[in-house]
Amino acid sequence: MTRTKRGYIARRRRTKNRLVASSLGGKLTRSMTQQTRRALVSAHRDRDGQKRNFRRLWITRINAVIREGVVSYMYSRLIHDLYKKQLLLNRKILAQIAISNRNCLYMISNEIIKEVDWKESAGII
Image 1 (tube, rainbow, N blue to C red):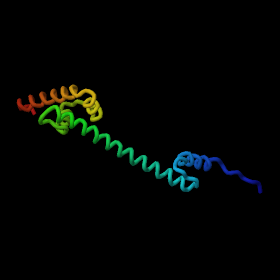
Image 2 (image 1 turned 45 degrees about the horizontal axis):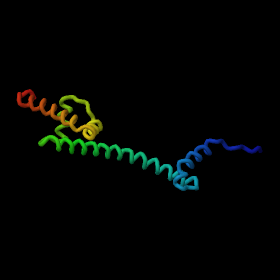
Image 3 (image 1 turned 90 degrees about the horizontal axis):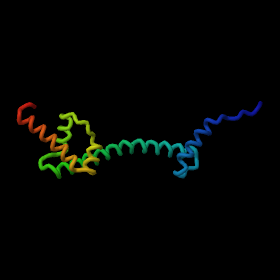
Image 4 (image 1 turned 135 degrees about the horizontal axis):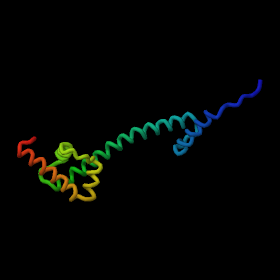
């Protein structure tokens, strides 16, 4: 019976695992596979956590600047009024405006306050 040579697919898969796990210090194929799988799971989980953390950071920055500028105005009221006025500014952009140019954010919030107060006092809402 002639000798059959194995294909390259399994070797390619092990090589990929070895490249990923080389920094983790594994030498055996099974431990490298487990380390690679664990690393990918952790990376996926932490990407979701990073999105949550950035959203919290943006909300905190906006709230701090808004409360500093206007006496009785807060983040939740600002976001509510933005949606009522149909201004499509997301939290990331608002946070960048709050850091780089506070006066611009004050102008936005003051315009929204004027518009909403005028409608409330006229009984339109």
